[in-house]
Image (cartoon, rainbow, N blue to C red; front, side, top):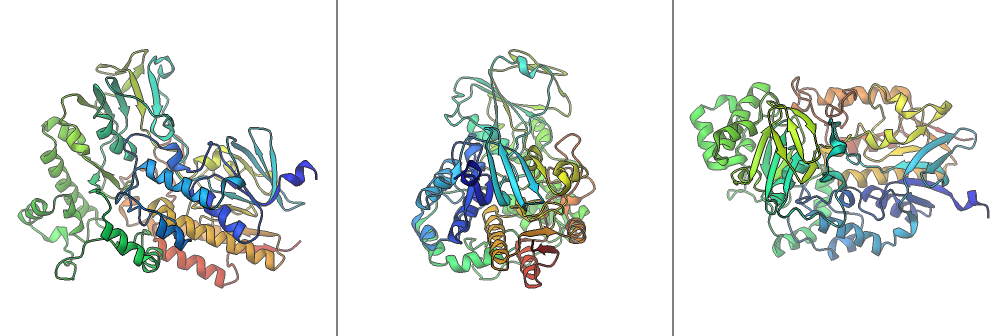
Length: 544
């Protein structure tokens, strides 16, 4: 057997997160050969890399779990409603163990190139270790938030203390006790990390670029009764998830005593006194009372003012409360953030807030971060500055399709894909939860399972009918990209004053294109099923 024979498979899968793990499992079940290539030294993907203090799931973990195995559903026990990173990583390792997934994985190597050979209809995938793999299919399970973004700041290489990024937290952990810690950013990762870091740091200075809207997670231990209800009802729960807007069934939500939900109101048709009374009664839950907050900019601004009133109630210092209050963009424009005691942390004497809109970062020196107005001595500097979302990991790989055209060049004006599954000009290349699919606007486990099952069913269809190539048609790709854009219009996600990483606005020079699909998990699933029912409408299937 030659070296090429040893490294030849039906599919090469890039990434050993939940998507890569399930893809490998599924192809093995279908009798196909596959190999997973992973940059880390073990499974877990997002939960392998994001080990920062306070990291946890932001959807119920009874639903942020695989549904393909009834045995797995029943045997695994979650300890909290929204479990923390160590427990989710433990779950990933458990899945890898019981299904023997590591035997089909190569760790500690990063894919550098993926090139399509039109003569053989095969992909040649190369790594930074000098290895080359050959496969009929190349499946990118690289994740939507897997490439950390660190802004360029003058002097950052001169800093003599410890430097970390929340998206690349050391496996061995970090001891921050007694240290002067600075953290740049107040996005989702920072909102989770800040309260936990404040428990041990001698001083914590938060450098805020843009204040965000964050809502209480209301996390708690998972009760035995709730766990039992879920496990007895998993078939129904999974069906509700698959047909829901966001891949969440709301099965565990407490129902009103009357058995009927209260009717929604228009916030614009209520008086100031009525809104204040609702705020007093429901706190952050007040935003679920009104039906026009996420569809009408005027209504949204009224809701934003209510939100700012809540911040003022929670934060003792009026100036700090004012700085933490979001302005100039709507609720629902950016990723929904959930926190545990975030605002309360700013009432601690050793926690300071620096408003970078008033005083930007000037330079970093050996022992301090300097803004244009002050100097802040630090022992530890943490970047909580987000990710090059959706396209970052794919653009880091030199992907070449027909006529050796680079994907990076095709996407120079923004990502274009059909259903977020395939890209015209790149036959037999699949992207799990790629641009143009619900992905980051959904429960990722639900979207991952749907994509993996669609891809594996497609591969089976090709094998049974002796097809060697499948490629998204250009017209179908164009129509879907336009559809994704149109569906997003009229929502706060594409409001005129909204600049989010959904649009790539956090990366300097990145094209502004709305990347995820707003239409919902259920609607998207039905579209994918319709495509298959119509003989893979929008795809070209070829025999050679």
